[in-house]
Amino acid sequence: MTWKPELDELRAREQMAREMGGLDKVQRQHDGGRLTVRERIDQLVDQGSFHEVGAIAGKAEYDAAGKLSKLTPSNCVMGRASIDGRPVIVLGDDFTVRGGSADATIPMKPILAERMAQELRLPIIRIIEGSGGGGSVKTIETSGRSNLPGQLGISQFHYQYMADNLGIVPVVALGLGSVAGLGAARLAASHYSIMTKTTSALFVAGPPVVAGIGQNLSKQELGGWEVQCRAGAVDHAVETEEEAFQCARRFLSYLPSSIHSVPARAERTDPADRREAHLAGDEQPPVLGSGEALGFDPVDVAATGDRREPFADAGAADVGRLDAGEPERPELDLVVEALEHPVEVAEVERVEPRRDDRLVALGRLSWSGHWASGPDSTS
Image 1 (cartoon, rainbow, N blue to C red):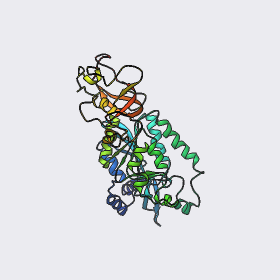
Image 2 (cartoon, one colour):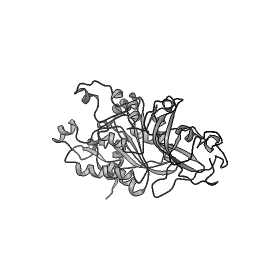
Image 3 (tube, rainbow, N blue to C red):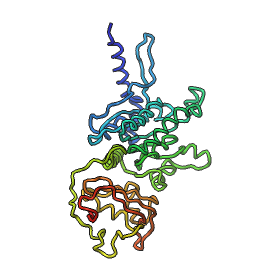
Image 4 (spheres, rainbow, N blue to C red):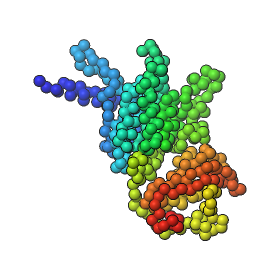
C-alpha cells in the first residue's frame, strides 16, 4: 500500500496549474504588453516568499484508465507572501483562463483571500484583470442559467468581507488590463488603486455594450486612466506594471498591517531640528496660518515632509496638471513622512485656484506622528 500515485497526481496538478491557460494564451498576454498573473506576483512580493493556497483547484479531466490528463486551473491565484519582510495576502486574476472572468472562477478562492486578510490582520493586494460575475454568455451556454440571482448567497460573503476589510486592513488594488463588471467594484473598493496608462481600462461594461446604444468608443475613451483618475474612481496611473508594483510597496510601507497595530518606525534620516521657514511663519505670510480653517498649497506642504525621496501625491494622476490649475480630482489624499513615523495625512476640504494659477487647499493639516522635539518642531 502506497500513496505515491496520489502524490504524483498532486504534483502533476500543480505543474498543470503553473501552465495557466496554455502557451498560446500566455504568449497572447505577453504580445499585449502585459505580464501573467504569476509573473506579476513574483515581481510584487519579496523573492521566494509567495506561498500559494489552492494551487490545484480547477476542473480536471481523466482518461479511460482514470489517470489525470488535463487540468484547467482556477483563474484566481492567491496566497500569502511578504513585502519588505512584512506578511501580506495577495490574489490575482489569471486572464489566460477565461479572460479572468469572475463567473468562471472558483468563488471561494477570492472569498478566502479576503477572509484571511481580515482574520490574520494582514494587508491585501488585489491584482485585477478580469470581468463579470453575474453570468457570461459562456456560462449560460454551458449551465443553462446565469449566476444571478442564484449566486447572491456566495457573492454577499465576498463583498461583505471586502467592505469590512476597508475598516480593518490596508487594501491595495492594481488594475493591469481590462477591468469590467464586478472587477471594477473590486478595484474601486480599496484604499489605494493604481492602473497602467496604456494597457488598462476600467468600466462597468466594455465598448461593444456601449456601441449597442449608439456610442462607438475605444477602451481608453470609455474608461482609460485619464477618464477614471479625473473622475476619482482610480487614485493613480503609471506607465508600466513595474511602476505599479513599486507604488504599491511604497504605499504599504507607510501603513500598519491593520488597525490593531501601529506603523513601523523607520530609521530617522530627517534631522529633528530642521526648520522650514515658510511653514513656521518666518516668512510673511506663512504657508500655514493659525485658526480652525487653513489655506495652504498641499503639494508644497507635503513635499517638505520627506527629504529622502520626491513627494508623490496618491490622488493625482499627474502632479504637473495640478500646478497648471487643472486638478484631476477635487480632493487630494496626501501621504508624507515626518521624523521616524511614516504616516502624515492632510485633510483637504476643498481646492481653489490661487492668483498665480496654482491651487490652494482649504482644510486642516493633521499630524498623526509623535513630535520628538515637541509641538513646535516643524520637521
